[in-house]
Structure formats: C-alpha cells, structure tokens
Length: 300
Image (spheres, helix red, strand yellow):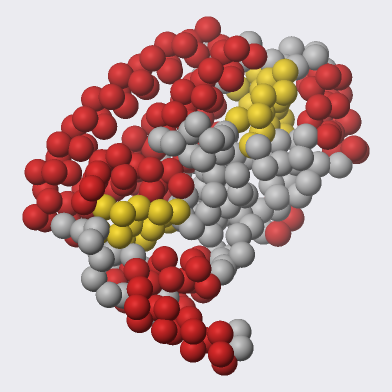
C-alpha cells in the first residue's frame, strides 16, 4: 500500500468512525450472518457481508473497502474453524477496531455454538485443505444455522440491551417461522433418506447428516485440490454399482468433470446455493434452504 493510499484510507476510517444512524453495525464474513442479523434486528441494525454468496469463502482478497467495514463494525461474525484464516486476520488488524477483536463482545465466532464434524486427529498437508477444528461448512445445514441465529440474537441483546424487547420480538418471529420451515424441509426430504450422493467439495456433511442423505465419495481427491480425470475415474469405478442419486456442488466450482461423472454414473448433477445471495432471489437463509430442498426434490 502506497503512502498516499494509506493516508486516504486513514482519513476514510476517521470519517467512517463518526456516529451513524443505525444502532448497531453488524459485519458478517458470510452473507447468511448479515441476513440473519437483519431479519432479527430490523431497523436497529445495519448488517453487511464481507463476501458475496457467489464467492468461495476459502479464497477472498482482503481489500481496503473491507477494512472500512470492519472498522465501523460493532459486531463481527465469522465462520471460524480456520476457514477465513487466509484473509480475515489482516482485516481485523488493519481495521484498528478494538471492539471486534478475538475475546471481545463485538467478536462472534459462530462455530463455537455448533457441534463440529470431521475433526481430524492428526491433520497434515497430505490431507489437503482440512481444518484442525473440524469441517467449517456447517452453514449448509438448517439445524446448525438455527443455532447460529440464536447466538446472533443473544449477542445483539448483549451489545444493545436497550433494544432487548425489539430483538426478542424479532427472534420469536424468526424462531417460529424457521422451526415450521425445518419441519417442512425435513418432511419433503424424508423419502430421500439413505439416498447416495457424491460431493464435489466436502461442504455438505452437516446438511447430509441432517437430511439423511449418504455421501459415498468426493470428486476432489483431497479437500481443496481440484478433481482430476484419474481420481474421478477411480471414484466412478468405486460407485458404479451403488446407484448414486446425486452429484452435488456449489455454484462457484467448475462443472466440466462433474457433468461427465454424473452422466457416466447415471446420477443427477445438482448445483446448490451454499450461501445467501448465491442466486438473486435468495435474500434470507429460509430462501436458501427453500431453494436447496426444491432443487433436491425436483432432481429426485
């Protein structure tokens, strides 16, 4: 960063730090977190996300505009479990915001409220992009995101106690609607219990466990390493007799090998929105899971 750019950024931070009309500024690394805060907090919060729903959260460029958002934040909500380690720490350091550092009330690691899955015993580089604290893609599951939503509600109350009644009202409305949605989603997927699926990246373990679908392989040879023809052929030979129903992946992964694999395995390739904003109509996490369930049931 040049000296002139640094001065301009410093001035921008100073002006951005002036009092705003919104009571609480919430910044989520994930658009889902911002959507939840908005739904529960209403006009008492101004919530925004550091990444878009069409991006791979593993690979994000830390930009000056992101530093400004983190500087203004009263609450920073992150995925945790090491997923953002390549880009979030530098934003937190350069933001000069002591309120959102680790251990402060303005910092919420959403992974601390869920039960982690796939926690490696002795992780090493040969295992690919694995995380020592477990698989961080819990945001693909309705159950885990309900737990996260409750944690966000409680943190909003902690940071803005004067708004307790407002947040309680927002939370009760969210909770009632979301519980009804989860019952409906589960019911619609009940006929798919035990359905065999192949994943592209290890992003869906929480969703599969909740829904009753069964993963029997992955197109990536190890997490974070792109599929190659040799590995894809090996997986195909392994699952050819297993009657695989779906090949599922996020929208930001390429589909060339996925399409070939799905055709040869006589399965349906289903490209799922893993985050809010992955498609223009997905504004809330309920929208996201509505869309996921719709895509799976229609493909089946």
